[in-house]
Length: 323
Ligand code: Q0Z
Image (cartoon, rainbow, N blue to C red; front, side, top):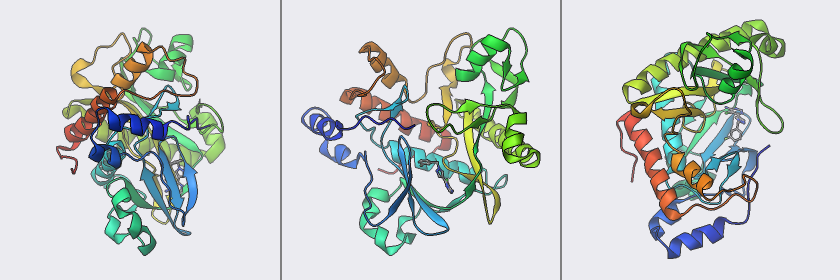
């Protein structure tokens, strides 16, 4: 279930305007998409997908941010563009390993009816091939954290995989492990064993997805580590297209992965989040009860968080985000 706290967006935006954020920056923050001539295909916490035709979808990354499972009332400048550009970077980086769903992210090539929204769409959207999505999340973990750490502490296993004894929280695993989950209809995804995945989608496809997931993760995580970012774990979604088994959705972004700054890595405790640490610290500091409505963020927290996303993009790719 997607939990969105509604009603504060414009209050937040006007509060920002009279305080610290420049009007130009504010105007660039996109909290909601609205393309009346298109049919909404799916809406996530921070992204919206529209149907273009039988074979194509329009993906739009907004500047919404979620923390502790809720979408906050404040947008993060540039976040949607950063996440889109990170996915585009990885699609190119991984193209020899796996076909992906990208058709184009060049707005000038979009259909005529979308041109009126060109400014909104630029940099934060892509047109993708519609895939027959497999009903599993392909999760891979190189480090033990989150739900896997909880499961390991309780049982010594993660998704049915036995792990060495004596691991500490956030430890690097001897080898990355494939820990699939099902897309729960409400609440959190549920971790499943490889055998359970095989029952859902078949043993052959399960093996293919596991091997692809591990190969893709290893190549990307090796690269990111050289750039000072640990990708502790990540979630891929695959589907079938005319190109075969296709990497879909967003790829190896801070929203679909745990990004940790390598220079601050220290096992034995939870790690700082590369991107959301200021947000989490603020929400803990104000002692939000983690029930709706989700609060707004002070402009300074939004601004510093924005800088972290832009920094992650630069650190990974060596590129500057367009102004
Ligand atoms: C991905 C999702 C999002 C909400 C549908 N290439 C594809 N073909 C068909 N379906 C999808 C894709 Cl990527 C697809 N999702 C997940 C994404 C917002 C849900 F941006 N839903």
